[in-house]
Image (cartoon, rainbow, N blue to C red; front, side):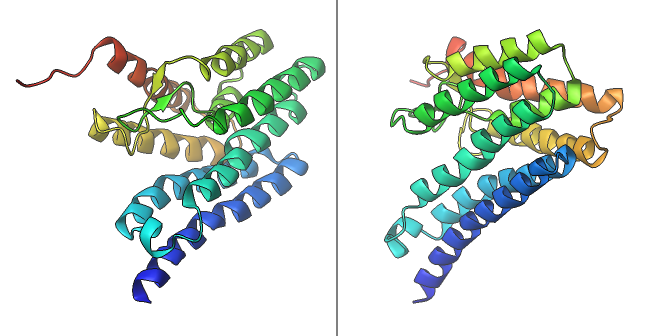
Length: 232
């Protein structure tokens, strides 16, 4: 029974992401984008912690009646795809018709990607851009690029979901994991700093956010280009 309680508690912890998604959506409905992103960042932190907890307490064995992967995907679609798409449409980040196009592209390609059984690689990275539109949207909000740049970034990343490009999972991809975890912590900390400041960040925050985003975006592709050495 103790094993079950611990394992099921991990499922409950994962499920708190649904409440965080609700809070983010309510903030988005009020066009309070800073608060929305802070809730989404809280959901991102939960998503980063629940996987190691699930493996630690062996939820597949002790709470097998509930599918933790499915639970995670449902919440991730809300927090990674659906709510960011809404924010991009309603915030004025893009002109009206471009915003609608971007939202449709993000949601339609995102749901197809999340249903793809080939999304994980042998080293626990992602095959194709993993639909982290919450992170993309936050960077676009913080940096405020021209609409055509935002639309181009969205279009390229949407296409990248369906190519065999590797994108690291900062927690599960073993290669460069200490550096990846450090960069991810830096990204989250900077994002909270920017969100807390109502998206009026100093230049140093913008620079840190951009550099850490570029690492997270391209580290896996660099790993593909430079395969790990094997010892004979």
